[in-house]
Image (cartoon, rainbow, N blue to C red; front, side):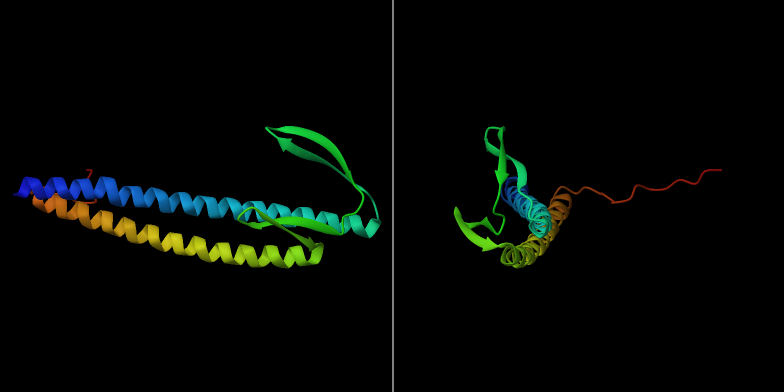
Length: 151
């Protein structure tokens, strides 16, 4: 009976908890990557606003896909299109875009905090299952190895 329970706990640990942890960590990484991209976009917008003050045209490189770039000259930098989600792009003025980016970053930060909480809960469950397995298998495990005095 004990061997069956041990196998069930090990299966639950490996197939459910560790997979859930991978998913949550992947989500957190995606949210962090999106925050990084939004911060870079905000920097570009600030540079566009500086270019607007001097009435210069903006010279840039545009990625056509598969790392193929072309030179582009942007003469009107009053508006920018930002991906709002679900493949939808919204046209903003530079000031509106900055406000949108700030709110989006705030929203993503909340999601990152939620995934951190979820990952810590999953880690706690993993530790609980591991402790239960140690007890079922009658293993004496200590987190810190015994210390020896050096003379």
